[in-house]
Length: 186
Image 1 (tube, rainbow, N blue to C red):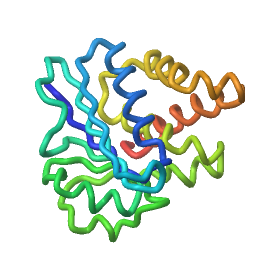
Image 2: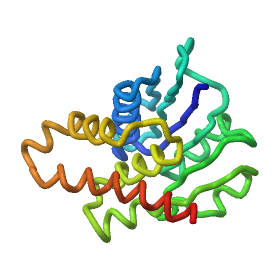
Image 3: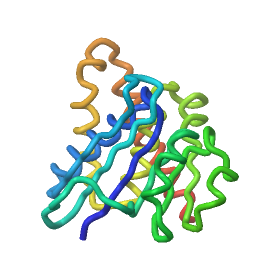
Image 4: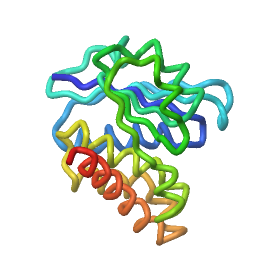
């Protein structure tokens, strides 16, 4: 089985960071992976998409037509992602940025995660994407927590060397995302 994940947001929100940490953690957990980044000409501020596939079998092509899970982090990413969202696509979105009304046209399961709000209130704003990653990995399953933490620390290694507290904030954000999804299931 292959899980197709589309992650969409604005440049600077860490869309590609989510994707890269996710594929490294999945690969270290024994999965086959594929990642295809897609962004506009702007380095920051343009819409950024990441096509990610994780599976127990080989993946023949990195891009896909319809996602199993779509992670939406900005208003403009909703519009850019809609061609990849079908009736069976599960949408995970940051409801501190995107309102429910923006997603009314999608007749599919929607999971609201207040990632930006949680990051600002309980951690630091820049780790909101790791809250989203924690929620996503909990939702899709199959990725070892140890490997997710290791991939996160490896990805942010240079930043952590400069600001040691980022280790705590990133790991706490992953855990917060996982707990948020678990709380929604109750």
